[in-house]
Amino acid sequence: MKIALLGAGHIGQTIARLLSGAGDYQVTVIDRSEAALRRLDARAVEVRQADTENDLALAAVLRGHDAVINALPYHCAIRVATQAREAGCHYFDLTEDVAATRAIKALAQGAPVAFMPQCGLAPGFIGIVAHHLTRGFDEVHDVKMRVGALPAFPTNSLKYNLTWSVDGLINEYCHPCEAIRDGERTELLPLEGLEHFALDGVEYEAFNTSGGLGTLCETLAGRVRSLDYKSVRYPGHCALMKILLEELELRHDQETLKQILRRSVPTTMQDVVLVFVTVSGLKHGALVQEVFARKIFAERNGERSLSAIQITTAAGVCAAVDLFRQGKLPARGFIRQEQIELDDFLANRFGQAYQQLRHVESIS
Figure 1: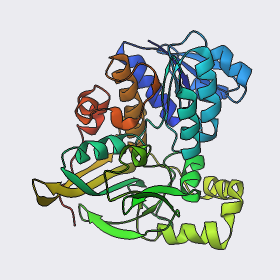
Figure 2: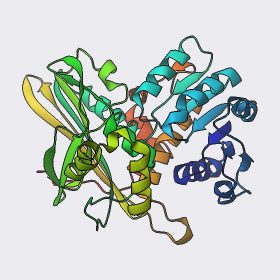
Figure 3: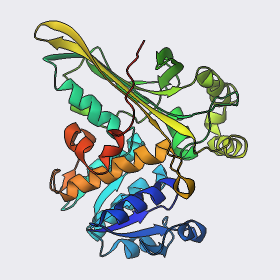
């Protein structure tokens, strides 16, 4: 299968290595940055420098490929999906942006190829887990989805290090959050709904952020009483972000905020990803709660060290592409993450990244 992979950042590099090493994929990595492309192993993948924000350039590099994986910033999603349809390529991405996903769903109507956005961790794997758990209930009451990509060793006042895209981070902090309340679909404010909990002896906070539910609000409409998604951080982070975004009004000057974060908040490869889903409802007349919880840690292995967010995000999209290639997903049209069976995902050679890591047992 010939793959056009757009984006040679940390996530793109990991996707390229996984797919090229699998033996079933011929990968061409495309980026506007020559420096980023030089970091790739030219013996394993082809590289092409191109302006990924130019429609004509995109059309030229996508032709002749079976599928495109878009690992560019979220604001490129609609452009790339449009050109993928024109080129006759199946489309996969990692976007958390709600508006982009709605536009891609419209593009998928009547298309001869498949469109599967939101193939990362959240949205992505978290939705597969939540949907799987709901299917075991006769009547579903509440679905709570919590995900955090956190530094293993927080040292600053924000108790945060940059582990992924700053663009994506600010996007999810600034846009309305889909949810279901009392059986009705609604929108919640970002950075609201603050709660505290502990896992494995560590204290956390969680609050509303945009995009993590993927398409679950639509899929579970009429079947659940409440459904929501929150990002997990260490205690105190939410209050400081509210100062920046609301009191200092940087919500209206996001480019300045991004510059501040890139300049002042270090990146880290020593991170941990927390996945925590609870579903409650009735089984055989009894009120029951089911929990799925994992902590996934960075891999420190000399020159090939991987952060936890690289592992989980790349595993998500690679497993989706692999299951599609195997015929376990529809061949055309819009594909939701929750159409993937959890057992198929965890048994997949890429999805096994979530299986091989330590479960969290203690929950309070």
